Image 1: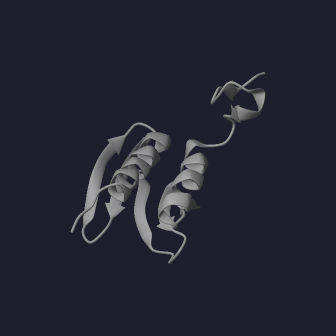
Image 2 (image 1 turned 60 degrees about the vertical axis):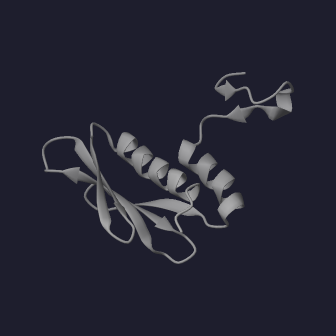
Image 3 (image 1 turned 90 degrees about the vertical axis):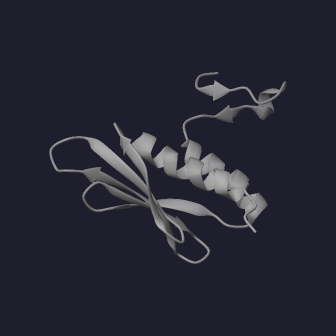
Length: 109
């Protein structure tokens, strides 16, 4: 069966893992909160995470320096926050996604 993860008891319920976790997360959370969040690659190893509903950038991953492969992650909400430094852009992007996933389940009012 190759690169499949089991989600149930039937072969039809298998999910192919070739797609990114982000795409699966977007589909699931897009249904519940009505907004899709996507990544866009910019120049110089920079990625922005934005809300497709209004185009607002809500997170970013960027390369720190120009010779090393250390990436920084930040979120853009009411105030900008730094999430940390990561050894790979995938880890940094995952940190931004997890931050907004937690925020989508948090009631602040």
